[in-house]
Amino acid sequence: MGLDWIGFGYAALVASGGIVGFVKAGSVPSLAAGLFFGGLVGLGAYQLLQDTKNVWLSLIASGTLSGVMGFWFYNSGKFMPAGLIAGASLFIVGRLALKMMEKPHHP
Image 1 (cartoon, rainbow, N blue to C red):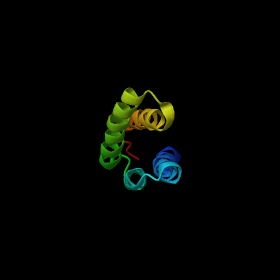
Image 2: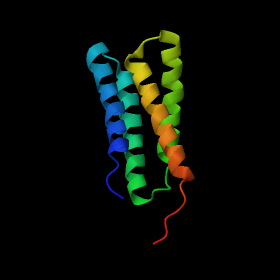
Image 3: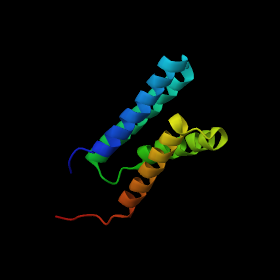
């Protein structure tokens, strides 16, 4: 299996969102949460490279982000940043669910 560009791209999106939140608004919680969750998702993408069935860390992190950011998007109605991260997180949760349902490949 090749490099998981989608998983690592999602990790970069989450981490950069925290950095942008800090730069634009001076929000230290945004920076901390973005780097924390971006790191978790990046580690989860790395784990998927090692074993395609090892989805749990990515699933928990992206599921948490989809819930929290979905709630913020619902309350604020603003697409940026909450709607973008909620949508991307839901996409990743769906993608991981599909990975969980795949049958194992035996050589």
